[in-house]
Length: 369
Length: 102
Image 1: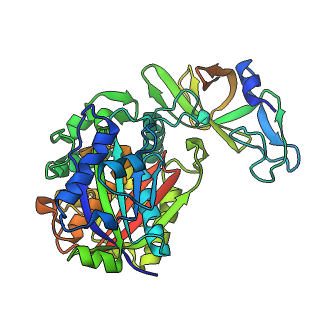
Image 2: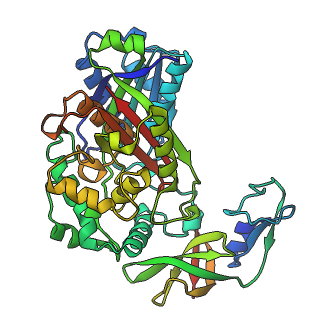
Image 3: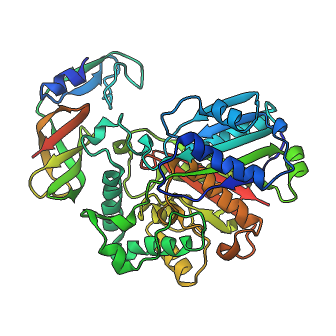
């Protein structure tokens, strides 16, 4: 089976702009080809679009807008981890030999319908994500004796790191007191504990080993993939203080790549809400259960950007269909030593964690030079 | 089996497979274990509060029934984890289920 690598990428700044989804998509694809002029668009075998937008036929539309006539063109939707699901589909097309080069483009508008899973009636009238996040937060804080102030450090760290990310939704820095005193959404959740929906786009060109090496001097290889769906409904989670799908996806990805968590130099974690960052780190095995905040605190105090260097979802914004792709671009840049002032020293192996609907499904990718 | 018809009349019932007797939640036409037909078990079921928080003046909680079904419900008095509750009001509004427990 051929190795599959990232040959090129493009991204747009995350904003609150009211743009047509087609224009949002086009932005990062143009950025990709502007920065990689030698790539021949005729070599693109497949165009995959990741979005929760309700617009139809977006992959053929994007293909037409970019002068590509691919063999394969379709959209993929899986709520917040649509992006990495699209990467995994592209990987599969290439690994199976159905395609040599696949363009993946994720985009979302600030008013995405993907924010609410209307099907999940077990949540009753509490379908907005702030309600599952409140239950997670309450449960996690109680189980592991974590205070609001301790948890607020996630938001402080990620807003700090986002200042080094030119594509982050502009939000500025914040202190622990700013987080704790920000608008109270529920007894257990403050506004600054939340990622913000926004408009944004991110694109990646994935290719077989031969084609990747032809098009870039610094291909980054996808060497581990793990995915798990435990349910669709939030209340089906057995635990509200850990993430089972993340644990299983992480184990599978690390096994495929033949690595342990200690081998991972830099990681993108799906911090949709503050509590998600320590919970995911623990479920992935980066710390013992209940000790995730220690890892986060140490990284923050030493100004080590190894966890969510671009600022995570909280610091950068969360354009659902683009998020997993933006996370993957960040790890790619880190491994290529192209992350500028966000750069983690000597990063060789990186991990991406992208999840949906209160961690009912997770995707984990391992990338390396 | 028409869970939603009963719910819209204010009746909370528990969907159960007629073949393997497993509870089927969320309610669908066929059992997700054996694809058997599903019927509705009626009763004044007692549940247990697993977790809760508060939004403005309203407490919301996760309630577990029969060690299987978990729903999110509103409760008017200050809840406690482990508290035993029953559904006091339920229905469908604008396509969304709603549940009150006390």
